[in-house]
Length: 262
Image 1 (cartoon, rainbow, N blue to C red):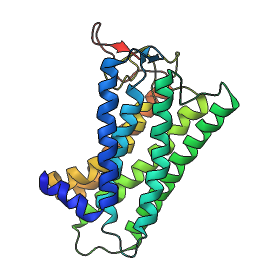
Image 2: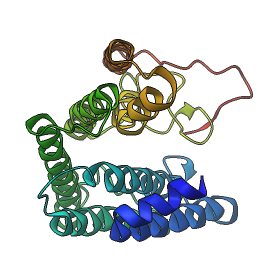
Image 3: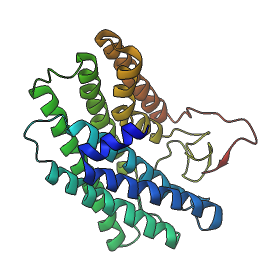
Image 4: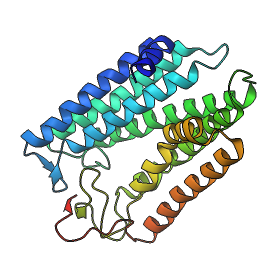
């Protein structure tokens, strides 16, 4: 593990430290869930910035690792695009959590509507930039990389991009619950609905293909056919959870006592 961490720092020191900062803030936000009583949608307000900061940490370190392989890539521009755009999201979400107010779907005032649109724009720009990175992995040859690992990176980026934009399913509806109102019972920590459809599940599964597929391919399969087959199944799982959510059906049905308020 220490070798892996040091390698990330060597490959991209800027995103290495940015990821660490996001991880530290994620831990702070998680601690605040135990201290603060501020709630949004009947759940502690600090869970949302915790999840976004942790997700950004994982994204930053993954891209720090992958972009190192790209020849003639303007890594400085990419780094600061990620830092500024995703940093804006985390800061705004945290500010709104501290105020006990919505960050996402908040159209209550022109200012909040504008800031919500800016978050959507920031996420879209990062996703498009990541899609461009994916195109570069198709455009170039990487003779030093195993083919199965290269295809895992390519397919991981494709699924990530598709299900990043799947976020507009929720943004267009101004809700993350289909078939009921936001604020119902959900599973611990992630708070995915246990009563209604929840597109956040597909969003989560699809976006983390960026980390899951290359890791599984490199350390487990070590085979191009197995990697592609697993990637297809993984993508189908994300599609299945999305279709199920759009039908208003929960993916998880927690037993009584195992739920938490969403």
